Length: 286
Picture 1 (spheres, rainbow, N blue to C red):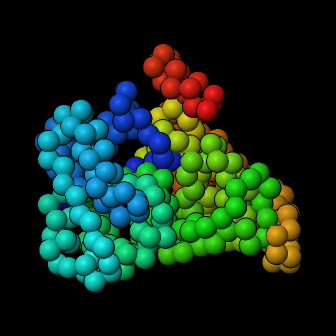
Picture 2: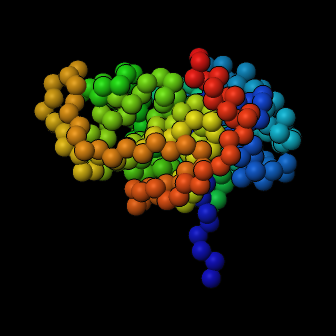
């Protein structure tokens, strides 16, 4: 008896390489069917949607994919158009671009288009999102928030996402924009949730909603506050929040993590590709 289809999410921290080795995008293409992939780009989060579509059409074309289309609703009414949802049904891979995750949530979540993306994911279509497109994968999405190392009370706000990755709050551009504090403050308020911060040019490949594999030049940060001591319920607005005893995992490329068990699954150190090392070094200097 055949079991349920395997689900795959590629949660990208933003600023993924598009003109060099493009390891993250190449992984997405392989998962979506290689040169025969039928990719659908959703640029709704961006303020320059047409330019964003062309950027990814060019990037995927370099990798060898010719079938790249886009869906661009301008309102919730348009996102409820059955014709747009039908375009999702034809795709083997869906890619949500960066921009403003609130815009993406307001126009797509809960519409026919949003529901079609969820249904496609559940039947095995690979779904990728970068930056804002990564945040929207959570059921509970960071919509706004201050940056910095120290977690502070009410420094961030949550909104509803697509719910493709329940039980996890995703943050992006993690190391580059010092978002440790806001992610930690969110899991302190909701300790049953796992916090996942993804660096730029890095992705968490989540299989079956559980198993994470890290791809790219940076790292994925996972924080588990299930057994932490916190004063999140009493701290005044803007004050530092006490978080003691949270478990932190910093996962480089090649690491595998089990979200259900909340534990490292495997890490097999690999020889560092010089191209990857150069990209990582350049990112540190920016």
